Length: 466
Image (cartoon, rainbow, N blue to C red; front, side, top):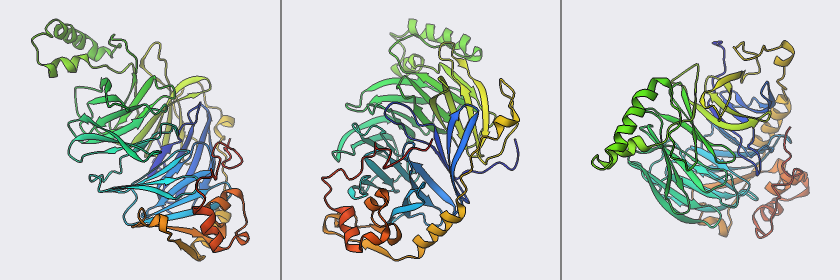
């Protein structure tokens, strides 16, 4: 691979919709951010590019035009933008560095090291603040993509693997799950919103729990040879599969079913592991529980071997071209597309590799890459327009909103609405900046919250980019 590949500061796959998993990818670099859409296995379309500043966080809402951005130059400021219109809708400033941002159609959550802010995404009002959380320097948290079961999960301890579940709609604690003995390293909530997968810093065991009562449903052993750092966990859209990636070259896929049959394992481990499993089954009455648990854990039904190790990466399972695929994006600027044959299982086939800098990379694939097919990246280069808009937003006067109903939850968080785009509501509705005064902007964005101000299912409000 080329040494000139792009180094990514941040990358995230698009959140899931109601019926399909978004095949979008957002990446942040030292020069801006890019948004991609995987229209087919062979076509990775770049649908937007912003070359303004170094980006450390960029999260896109589904396949909509709404993005949340945090830059390294202003790590305490969250900017919410409508990238198709080139508008910054609003921005929030916090007392500490923003470590994570999660969003769905109902809520936007900002994670600081020792607190979390829950915003109503319809008007960006701060609804609730969770303060004095255990130190969370990695900004680890996850938010259900299901707005009906809108659960927020975050570490409940900095020394053990406890998970705190919080209802982000009713704004109340749900349960505390003792998932691991070691501190948490990764979490993921299923798209149905009823299950959570967890991994600890040891990285050898992955567990799946029922969110409502905290009961353990599944336990999978990633391996017994070495401890690893789990980079990401992700459920498939139907909740039947779970994939995990780490700092090693192996990505595992687990099947979530109620069968007790141990899946086929690689030849390297199959002989001795099956022998030990039979021995443990026969001697289960007198061996310690900890020993028998190890051999009763499920194993991966499929796996892939990446052409690299030691790099940060994320994985997800999606349906592309009517075939189940496993996608892996890495920090050195590549997207890998693998075929998943869940009937046969075993080692998955690399189908295509995409570079995330708009250039073609020559790789081995099951079919030749035609030159015509290679030039599929659509560059939406509105750099001059975008830069001028950002310049106006930065230099224009800002209104700091300080209302009675925001004082308690916003002690260390201030909202600034830039004048050129009007209010949050006005920006999304297309109101010109001159049509509303500062006072009207204030009232329009933060009052009458009983009304559903934005229909996020309406493409006219958040048009999907195809």
